Image (tube, rainbow, N blue to C red):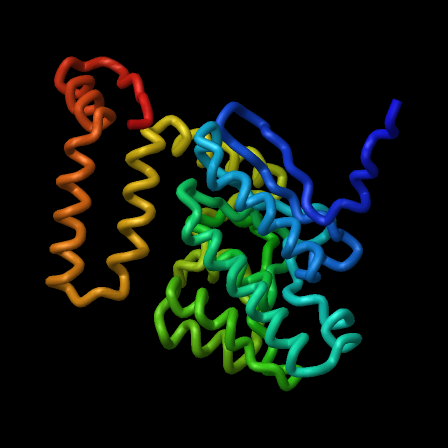
Length: 266
């Protein structure tokens, strides 16, 4: 009989709290779940597998230990100096963040403790975020001579320019309440209620047509950077295709007939 895997050494843990919902837990608690090369590779592999899994409707990204994610593993970074390593590292991280955005399923960040630098970038890259009241957020690279340029990409697409620039230029920690005010997170809850709140939000989304959610998520991000008229043209084409789907027919008929819809995912 083979020995059970040692979960303490796995950088990302996968769990299925309910049908259709997958929780990916960052598992480098002693390093505040900093984004080592191995952790990013493990998270990327999970996302790649989930992308093709029609049984998965929502993904939650959580973390073990005292904090959500402290950004890049600076000890690992300094142990491998040189342009080639740095280019590969930031390319790997950028690909990971874009994979979250491109994933057909919505992704919810479940944030406790700190989410700093690339950890804040991870929160901003997720479609939704639920934070504990005690959570704190920052892009503090400026304090150590390394401007948070890649976290800036996700951050500036979630909050206004002046709020993003204030975070980037000062490196100050923001409490969860302020993060909610500027649009970085959706909901702030007592820490004891964090997992339940994230799961509740995931459950609510998982009850929708997975095809409709996939169509909507893709259209949302695609139209963001388009001029207004082009965005409306694109959205109109998406609406037309969506209307031709079986789930749209079923949803509208169920609404008219005052009954619960039965989604088919097509």
